[in-house]
Image (cartoon, rainbow, N blue to C red; front, side, top):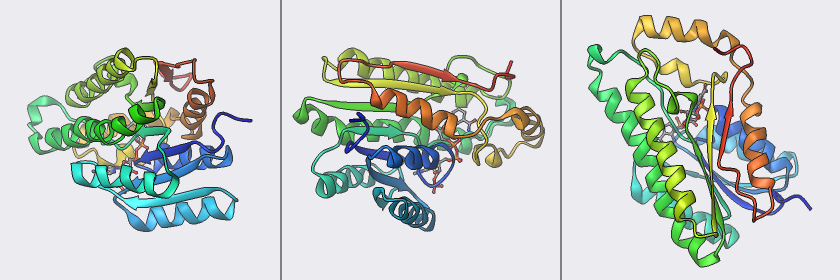
Length: 244
Ligand code: NDP
């Protein structure tokens, strides 16, 4: 039996890109999914697609910057399925810009979603995983969480923070909670559409011509989940073969 089968998996940012691809892949593996994002119509459509394909999913509209909503998401997962096996902390934003442009509002949004949202997710599931004496937290960092690029200072800062959190979870997991830090390179999603600095957007869009399919990341996430409980896949970097 696959280790994915029957696992209860919460995915934030499931309405698009990597989160959606991960939901579709894990559903085929028999996971019981809890889909979260702000855009309800997208979640309904994904839930229906998964059910039509014979999978199991519920959704809850969730803004990850609101701690109470993230707690309520974890509660909904427990009420529906009785446990929480995996949290995929995936919701994120990447409005890249040079520091000199002082897009402080965008800096704050990235901190709120990419760091605080991830922390709220951890806080919402950790007590349940401790009670169960088993759990798995998967955080989406980035190649930009290993290296700073031009215009990526703040985004990279958030993704370096995510990497630190993944390592902290690993160290404090006490043999019960697995921690996986996923670091994608360029993947074709809606992520780049929110870059408001025109020159940066142009450069990133050119670079993203080589972007790979989101299912490449979904496969990596599935790989980490399907390992036996005593095997903890801590870090996976996946990028286009052509990415420098
Ligand atoms: P998308 O823009 O396609 O998806 C982002 C998802 O995050 C959406 O489902 C969006 O849903 C959700 N989201 C954004 N803000 C919030 C919020 N406040 N509350 C809840 N959900 C929110 O991007 P990707 O799929 O590419 O990104 C997924 C993750 O992967 C991110 O953490 C990103 O940083 C990371 N990543 C992506 C790379 C890439 O090249 N694509 C490379 C490296 C890392 P909604 O708007 O409905 O709330």
